[in-house]
Amino acid sequence: MEADSRDVARMWRVYRTIYQMCRDRGYLVGQRDLDRNLDDFKTEFAPNNTVDRNRLTFLVQKRDDPGDQMLVFFPEDSSVGIKPIRIYAEKMVSQGVTKGIIIYRKNMTPSASKILSQMSSKYQLEAFQEADLLVNITHHELVPTHVVLTTEEKKTLLQRYHLKESQLPRIQLADPVARYYGLKRGQVVKIIRASETAGRYLTYRLCI
Image 1 (cartoon, one colour):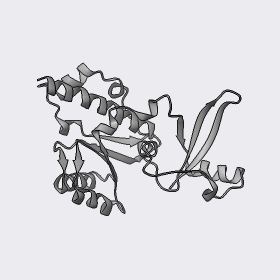
Image 2 (cartoon, one colour):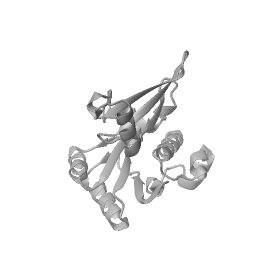
Image 3 (cartoon, one colour):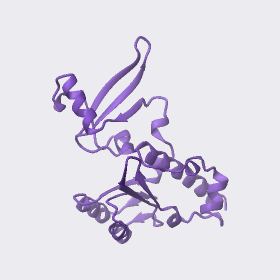
Image 4 (cartoon, one colour):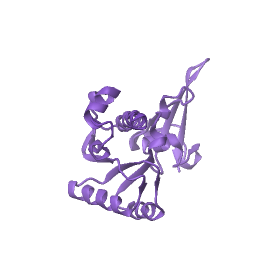
């Protein structure tokens, strides 16, 4: 029973972080979901002290583009293989959704990872381990504020400073913060740091 309670509390933390992530990527999420406490989470998703991960699945849409939608899945299996990936892909196709996130418990099989890679030309299906979402890394005091630039903002930045994008400092696609914001190659992120002299210090990084 104690182990079940720990699992419920763990999933509540993951649930909270993924909703914050969707919000920070510009998707519409309900304040009720952002503020949901552990007791409410238990009542909604774990009435028998066991989390029903299938019920955690949710759909969000971009704040400024209703056509940009994303599904978030929570597989039951500890090790995610090909079968659930195919089920999720079929669900995305049936709903006309091209973006998705899989929150897996422990690992994904090599064959499942291969399918995700093969799907990338048509579908953007990301995968995060639950352990990576127990804490929102962007809330850590050592992580400065990151703001993803729009295409137009990136163009204005390069013109203003007479730069080519290759001259910008870089951030790796696999960087935890880049993954949190769902950065794609070629996107630029503005990083805002506190400065004792200037109040704040801005830098820009190109995702590669």
